[in-house]
Length: 393
Ligand code: SF4
Ligand code: SF4
Image (cartoon, rainbow, N blue to C red; front, side, top):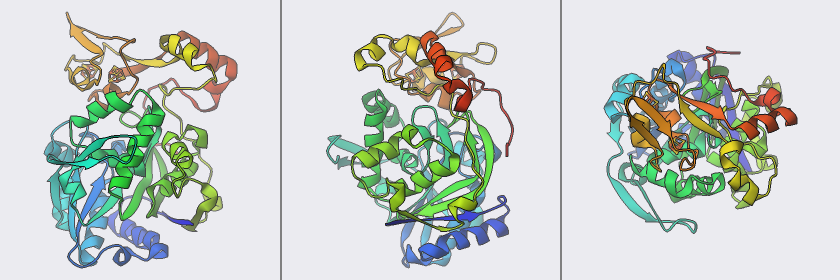
């Protein structure tokens, strides 16, 4: 049986958040159950890009600060590290409030720039992970709960992909990103190569819609914690109201027989699940939808059956960030115009995730639009709108 704890936090004010984190960790032994004196403890927040904390793109700095302080009080040495998807590490850390959080808590910021090569666990021959991540005595994983265009949801397991250093992420998108199942296997191998000691999810304000970079903040007022990130994600998905069959990583974990993937084998402590109001996150517009078509037909009709990225030229400034990040080099900028080669595009959505101006939009293929309309899925949980909604709920 895996244990996942839930606590409420009305917001990010430091005294209230600190009490909430202490309450959250009580059922699983408190911070001292995870940290020994002198441990070098790496806190791994989500530092996707240089966005202010209230955009809900990155883990809130107040949570990182509180956890760093608790680590120090338990006798550990707190480090904060990640490898942002876009932008220099210090620029991202500054913008998302982590420079301040590190200074106030006495933690050290560490950029992931050096990697160690590790043998894969079966699906992949070898994987390079950040040395600072792999060699830390303990990892405390601090994900933000968000929707994700390619994987439906990003939370505890997916956040560990940040342990892959910089440009190698694009290489993995190219190798494994053509299939959500293969990409899920990669995420699960990364998790198993270096298991976090503890996972604490920032779901005080989460993200719905076109996550992980361009969605809308949604207030849940919750923190979720556990030792097993798969179990933590299963509960997070349930709290976000995302159908279990759309959670690719957790579905793959169940297929692989990994502990924590089956909700019946998870004991929830703290706030009882049934007392938390039901929510249903709006899902990303570009998500793949399976209509049960045979593989050969789905492949042949790929451009009509899937969504694809299109730049909104009223917003796009032709900065080239998306082009440089695109794993299969499907984006070209020529004569003041940006174009996407749909046949080459693997629908990894890195371009959308990394565009600093949210100029990369999603367009649905003709057949996809028709099938969604016929099947009624459009109205239930999908939205094609990318208009910001502000904080809801
Ligand atoms: S879509 Fe965004 S990232 Fe790509 S060139 Fe335009 S502004 Fe830059
Ligand atoms: S165009 Fe965008 S979605 Fe397509 S492969 Fe390139 S980065 Fe990925």
